[in-house]
Image (cartoon, rainbow, N blue to C red; front, side, top):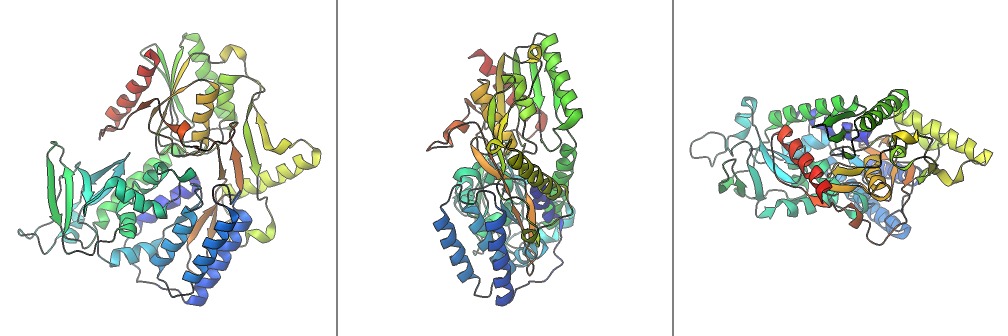
Length: 490
């Protein structure tokens, strides 16, 4: 998922330089043939949340739709809606230059920059380069239509943010039908996805918002050109932060001499010798300082390596912590349209070979994973609080599950975006040959140690819900930490 999300972010850097593009029906059908073949041959457990019959039905319907001439944006919507039905958040359709060009050429955007912070829709800064893009004819003063930076949008065209996200959710995948991870994915490209679900066809649109001074205001804005330069600057900043986070294996500190604190923004590099040393030193520091209250912050962590080496410091050696299976192993003929010059593909090929060898040797055990040896003196046996939010996904969500059920941890924040039970992972990127659309598929399937239940969302609910809007990142971090340590008093 980490690999796909970077493409997802960087797609937004591309300025409007392409003309509207439409495939021929023959090209559309060829793309569909590849899409269906790849989905059925490479997606780990395709029918995890939707029956095989339903999948076949929706694929047949998609083929019928693609027998009519569609624009790039229309194709994107159709493929996205199909993928979203699978309820597998790892599996996505990624937008590209042509799709964004078509959106921008329609000129139905608001003259403000919007982004999601947690579940709040916030007004960003519009820079000078976008001055001409934000001038509207119905502005009596002839200047840009403005809403104060930092204002929180309550509704657009009488649709509240939750209502808009329900519509947007048709085009974004989430685990087990939950909306949380869809908020996370839409955070930097909200206006694009709002346009897909709620295109603005009026000359003037009602926008209600709360200013930074807490005044509630209703204002009418005219749709038109998007403030693309401002959007790109924000997306560039988000991408830089993403790449910086990708280099971190994790951070640990002791706060106020009484609390341990782990912060993991990613698990992309959280494995190997360096990580083993980091964990051993961190848990030794907890022991040496007699710390018995520990906070583990997993906000915005969309996963990476499964954290079997971390959880052993809580449960000890030889504990069943789930299964990991290459459900659709490497086969040469299946990989024609898969991007191959990247580490996820190389890792997929290696894991497929390794699993095949284990099956042959009789050591595979259906992918069951048991914790390795750990120094019992370093096991943490105190109180644990885990901070989760919409971006806590994949291996980060499974770690939250393990800590909650095996280490009696309490959850603070908002429900994790990812499943506590199972999912497909190991993201590979597939490029459709005619349109160039990128699809992320996931040939591996992971399972936690839990038995599936009728309501898989209940377990994700936090013991302490935190959703206050705090724009300053440092103050926001303090808010979540205070809420976490407050659970130790309960």
